[in-house]
Image 1 (cartoon, rainbow, N blue to C red):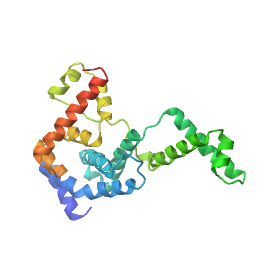
Image 2 (tube, rainbow, N blue to C red):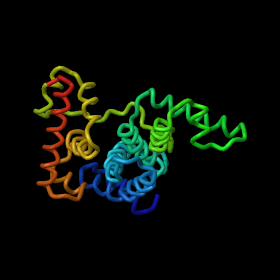
Image 3 (cartoon, rainbow, N blue to C red):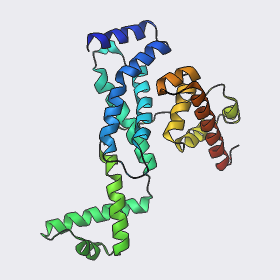
Image 4 (cartoon, rainbow, N blue to C red):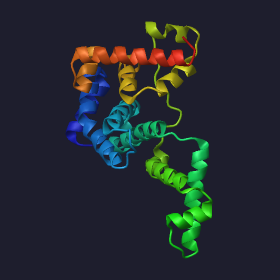
Length: 245
C-alpha cells in the first residue's frame, strides 16, 4: 500500500465520516472505470458502460465498508472482486433469458462440439441438421449466446446473498416496512435501473445527504433531488405493479 493510500485509510479509521469516505471513493474510482471499460467491450445491446460504473461504485462502497487494513490484504484485489461482482450481477439481471432458451443455447453449443469432434465444419447447415432447429431460431439462439458470454467472465466473483438496500425512515416506503415485507422491497428494487439503485443506496443505506451524493456523482444538488424523486417514483410504480401498494 502506497504512502498516500495508507494515509487515507488511517484517516478513515480515525474518523469514518463522509469526507474521508469520499476521498477513498475518489482515490479508487479509476479502478471502477477501468473494470467497467474492460467489461464494456463484451456488453450486450441495451447495457451501457455508465450502468456498470454505477453498480461498480456500489461494489466499491461495500468493499470500503468491509475492508480491514490490519489484515494486510491488498485493497485493490479485495475491492476488485466486489466491484466486478456487482457489475456482473447487473449484467445478468439485464441480460436475463428464459430457462428454455438457455437449454437451446446449451444444445447448440454441444452440437458445435460434436460436429468439431466428427471432423466437420461448424456451419449453419450442419448445426441445423444436428439440432433440428430452423434457420431463424438458430440465428436467434446464436445471438443470445453471444450476448450472454459476458456472464462467464468471472463466475467465481459473484456477490452471493448481498442485500440490495436496507431502507429506514422513508415515508414512501412505510407501507412495506410496517408489514415487514423486505423481500418484496428488495425484489422491486432489483427491477430498477442502475442509476436509481445507486441513488437509493447512497441515500438510504450509506445515509449520505443530497449534497454529499452530488459530490460523489459530480452533479448538482438539485439534480440529485430530481434523481432521488424519480427513483422513489419508479420504486412505488414497481410496487404497485406487484400489487403491494
